[in-house]
Image (cartoon, rainbow, N blue to C red):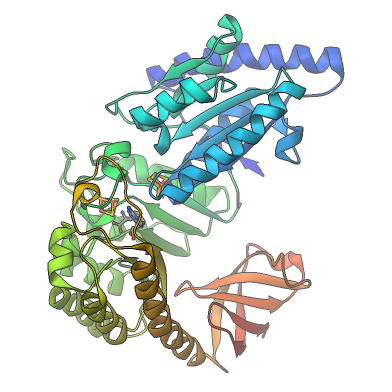
Length: 475
Ligand code: SAH
Ligand code: SF4
Ligand code: F3S
């Protein structure tokens, strides 16, 4: 683990929080002196890379407050859930865990429980927590994670639950401390929020309107990361293709990529997620020209039927999507394209799924996240009349997988016998003696090596192919 340096503390908000961080640190140091042990923390993160990245900031702040790490949740003095609400099962997991924490708190009355993230931006959730989960101490949302220290301090002072949820985002708070999970790769937010309002999706309601960080702030952050040993960065946003639209400076995502590509010492640039409606030719050319930008694009298409796409408010047609894919492949021949597919949207029956299968066959994805539609209260799709039964949705889902998986396997098989650059990431938890790494096209490979290779880019020859990963050997 490795604590990022904070280059500047100029931001007023940060200055204010630093005071609270110091106050809690003092309390925690005194506790450690008295008891001989430090207060420990445990963070559980649900949802997407944006949440994972927020959790690194929460962790950074908690480390500065003098908390150490608990090996398991049940041994922690401070537990925080950074929640997701994109699908119902993500929410159910949190409620399930909270039920368990009720008993824990009875055993350990000094245990502190905090909740944050996307779920907390919904009034109905806050209501439910206030009524049924009274053991929770601190609740905040997606717009004010930087206030963690102040909220903890208020809770300690008042000894009563603290709720602080903002309906609207404030200014972007730069330079939060952060603890990165990996020394050699890092996520970098380039924008927050989403303006697209796909009719099934809750994200725009819980993450607020689209806003981009200035290119100077992004480039400074990437420079600092590279100086700290980072080789690969992933630029993060719900829709990176519309980067820059609300900024005073005139800059597009493609121009940002070209700027970041100039940074010495950086080896690989990734980004996610791209929305097909905003994908410009300019971006394709930048990907083609920038040697550090990896030959991979994640381009969710969700569904293939034009009527469904229209009702999803996706703003492209099946033909347009396939045209974009063709254009990308004509410029970048070795590109790997991955996608998200949503099955069971209102009105999607066997006939409509045929169009989804057609896109899968034509686009030839290297990988896909496939989701069963989950009704989200407050979204337009939730009140559409022709909701699909679970059985029908599952049937469609299986047909999607049956079409998708052989293609993925076929694409993987073409790598047999070839040698690739692989960034070695960590020991494989399932295969002892094996290291997990990623090709530039984002394929996962397991290869025999010792842990000293972790963090390096090595040459790996592919010797075997499974559906979801490759097996290889160091050469
Ligand atoms: N901004 C990204 C995706 C963010 S959410 C994009 O638009 O590409 C990640 C994925 O979750 C989406 O691509 C979609 O496939 C899925 N998803 C979103 N809302 C969902 C819902 N209500 N039920 C099931 N899956 C959903
Ligand atoms: Fe949700 Fe659509 Fe925004 Fe993606 S682009 S986060 S699917 S509303
Ligand atoms: Fe979930 Fe929020 Fe990400 S709803 S998918 S954690 S933006």
